[in-house]
Image (cartoon, rainbow, N blue to C red; front, side, top):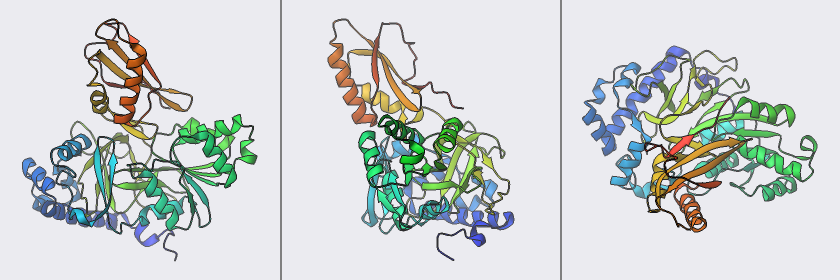
Length: 423
């Protein structure tokens, strides 16, 4: 059997065997993290939880949730990893910087076999030419897929984000047949190609696309598949954990990898909800380098625990439905309300502000609404400075700055508002 093929023994475990497998893995990582990661020991002690209390999987609810904002704050107080790294810093080969900022370590010799297998599962093969359109800058997304695809023998074209005009030419010249990135950007490339007179079904070589890093409306997926004949697959992961869920050929939810344990919880209580009920995705990664226990991703989804016709018995994340709290994904990157506050805190000319996320066609739009404290401000100059500051801090480009009359915004207006409507 080839290393990337579907492994019936590990992926087709019976429910009883799978539950024991998860219990053993959870027990091992909980004890290991308590011994080796000072922040986790402190967190457990403060919550009154001792690893010896973990007697069954249901006891995982006794373990305190780790929220991204908490992780960011711990890293700020005790840089770079806030006490969550369980190996010497010298044993790392890369440190990524996710929005927040949050530092994500990668150990020397890190394997991307899990992600490579997922690339193989969705149909990428040796010799395929695949454009990876996710960022290669600071965040792990671009390099993660790059390494996974090269692992299975695909030729990678590391286009990264933006510059759709050039990317269309590269795709045509190199006859790129595969795509990894957001559904939104794929549609941007298609529209750019159409502007250049391409008949997409006949002249646009991309025929397979792995979509990730944002919610995908069914209408958009249908457009890609039925109008443009591009076979689409969805995958899910985080910067901290990597890719850990991916569709099979049934396309009825994303199977979870065996080296993670995923819960769907009620964000207000930390308790698990029933299969089929919507809640926050919480993940425990069986990784002894950076053992994050019950990490709350901030994403909303629900699990399908029914057996899949493909033969895999792992639960499936059905789809990502939105976000919890003040963080939202915009063009494949997280944008936090706290980032907006940080970016605008230096502008004494502004009394109130709100960043609004909307959607025009298949593209996310960012509009900053700002009230001025006094008249006579050079709005053109201020707008220029605002745009550059926000891009530096948030790593996203604002489409429009609107200066509004005093009293337009409510005193308690949120720094970040998501006005998008998802099907």
